[in-house]
Length: 285
Length: 314
Image (tube, helix red, strand yellow):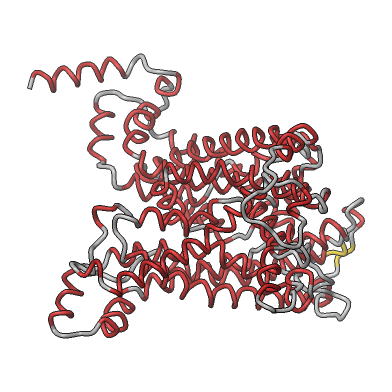
């Protein structure tokens, strides 16, 4: 999917026709409409306060400055927010990849009592909106004493029904002969999982990993519910809090949003197709 | 032959001395249960229990400080949602508007963008990047960005409008425009999602099919309406349902851009749940609202599950 080589040339030789020019212009206009706001944001983060608040906004910064960044990282633990997000999202991703693939292996390659019943129980949780469980989860986490902790951010998201579904689908396509041969040779189940199933599932794992990481990195509601200590905020929560507490300091707010967006856009530029495939495949956002 | 033997031999020796995980030796019959027991326990604690808890609370006049003193009131919390003092009907209406506008806009826009992307080969990756970029960004950052683009005094959009002689608009600060201003941002952010799914659908249509119709003298217009669109009907349905379900759950944009305001103009169900449960500590009402929302979304999800099995065969 989405490989250059497979994209058809529907217009054939008519590459320089008027129609082609019009199509390109429309496409460019759409691309600009999607991307210009980001450019405006990045450029604005280098403008001094007065320039952003001038009634005639400039696109290119006239009084170029990096003071927004120095203020933001010295007055607020913005780097900490970034590291918090990176840590929490990495752990959530690794844990979900592990639980999903392990369950996927069990559902794909084993026969046992109540298998389909268990599978349907897990899968049907996909239809539960987060809004339904968010308040009970909040009180549960509070009772476990995990408000304002990293544990509280990770624990409700260690198993993902869609991940299990995806890994089962994928692993059912891996020939059972491989597994049987390894068993005959005396391999343990964990060995088969670790040395056969996982290496053969890298495609599905990378798609799922990309999706889970982005979803965790971007999530706001749950951190907003349980985190009140400044130094434990994730990046989205840091940006949102900045927008509430420093509502009049546009320069800082815009710079905070830039810090939240640019790294993820760079990552996206480097692996456009993998990420697009991950999000499109999982189709959950 | 010798090499195959060799590799098998080395694999066999691998099997005895490899890492902690590989070395765990678990009997075959016990393996599924050893894996599933903790997973199912986890499911019970972090999913089934919260749902049961929400149902239980929704049937009570819930007292957060002392739950055991809560009074059982059956469906009072549900019927109270219809009282004029409740914000439920406002939030419900706002959510419906939000869902309808977002879905009606996103599906055709996604298809159109996909049709455009389909025409480009060498530059497709670049356009894909631009169209998809807002989706990978945190909604919190997107919300903050647009809050300032929309700013009534200093925002670039209003500056542009002023230059063209259009009076400045309040956007998210004006009750009549706020909901539509937020949904516009949401639509802008998510066009790429439908576009990518439709693009995958377009690419799976065999070229010969279109070629054959073209040879028979079909126009570009006929080609689209008679072949492309019918073959995409399953994809269209899928995108529509996914978009519907996603629209019902909007929270981040509302929280950061408007916090439900001005007044109650952008209260949606998820925001109302948070507001009733945490800010007003009326857990009974919050739980009742969340279960109503659950019921609505469940209908669409059942449709979605049916759709996971593709019907079109080429």
